[in-house]
Image (cartoon, rainbow, N blue to C red):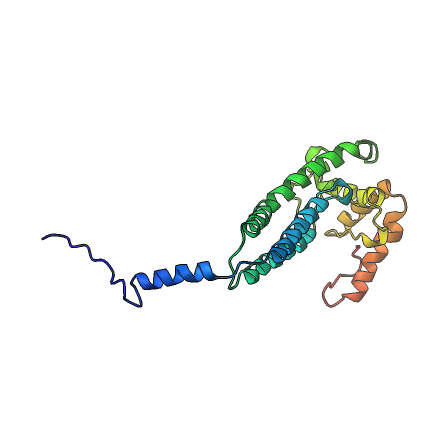
Length: 239
């Protein structure tokens, strides 16, 4: 039996050549996006790019997740602007180029942010070497120092017993107060149990004399007083 190649009926209104030709004609007769509109979009893309580069400045410090998500939301809004711009219109070559720039910027942004933060932390550790060598009870190792200078919104440090977690927390508190000039009343340290609280106070007191007694503990008492229903501390517990 011979195979017979069947060609679509060119006059068929559903699957013939007519719908294809109609789509092609509709595309060519669509009005192009105007040059002023293209330039406005291009300028917005350049602003988004400049905003990202501005965030990756040493003067601004660690590029936190909060700042990154804010930048990313603005970039996604700009993508939606593009979709609205080309509704019923043909994009110009310059408009397509701007879109490509925006997409590449978004796709590479998280990796570029991570690279900047790694470089920033390495530089911060080196620059604050005197703080780590002379300002602590015992010098911290390389990983501990990175944990101290990391300024992400949430930082989780996993380490075994006796590995220096308390030293890192005490150094972090001193780093925030001395180097970053964070008001001491805005720093709250919490521990499990009375013994750990006393050790934490002693560690912090060595780095910031008088701070542990006058700033840290009253904040804990305030927390306990305002949140008795959620934090049922037993008599004799320390914060």
